[in-house]
Length: 450
Image 1 (spheres, rainbow, N blue to C red):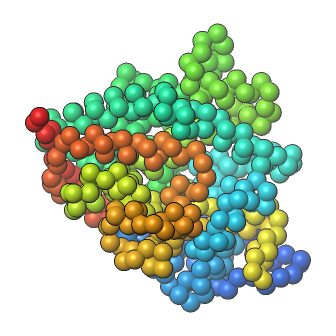
Image 2: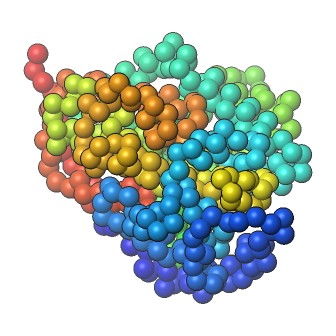
């Protein structure tokens, strides 16, 4: 079933207005430092262009909201989403500049739903008061790289990835059919939850993938906590996941002599010397990492399998992963908040504004990719592809530390070459604005006899 926001808009419009009114002075204030804002429209009073931004599109193409505005205003334009003044960018030069400014003039940020569901508001006051945003980002990134970076992946994780892929695919071959997105999500969760906090999903018998998926769906929803809305369901799933992590933290603090050598152990050890690493910070970070790894990898892998189903010979090319992630553009955007006024090409982006760098505007740009909606893995063999990759390809936000997200699908597809499969049903895609597979994508998997 496609996600259609009409019910939520009807139920929550008055609540949304109330939220926006309470923030009116802060959200709509144009700072007195002067300067010309990028072109664009702030939409209707209070609600801005929120409704059109969330309208689903049953296509992998650039969403109508973005296509319409880039045609009219160019690749950098202003808008207002969920009561927040924002600049949306499909400009590769501007995006590269912003990503390099992480922790300097911008910080990682989310729309209101993101902030509430992933706990960004639990750290904002600390970061602003102590002016250590860049240090926090650097420290957390280094910890994650230590556990999931290229060296760790090569030396420690590959055997686990191999065992997981073989076990999963062999199990799939015994079933009548599998729902690729759902079953890939379970496979990814079984691995990443063990690496993050030694959670044995099979032993506990508790399937948390549904809760993670519901939390993910709420990240780009209207932040209205009314029964029946996506955001309300996401909050319930958030509470469940937070409780699981909080219990694990409590048990480990009570038994300091027991070490599991996972990411959570590392963060708890760093609590002794890093004041920003509070229990709340670590709890929300662990949930955020679960959501990011599960949804990014499972959606990208599902898209890869779908595209290969339509072009079977591409399974032999591991570069197919780059092409499928380009077409998928899984995340609707990379979001940052300005810490000070930013000047760019005669424009000003005021302090405290939101910046949304949209990946579809880059990945599906016909100036960078010929026939951009066509699945063509061989395009990644072109001589000038590295220049294109540097400017128009940011599947994971353009930051390091995403070896797991990219290499796990590659490894899985390597083992998929030992199997063949056929489509059973489904496979229709849409952007809601996140990439979604309507009624699922079901395939029958069989092992190739040697």
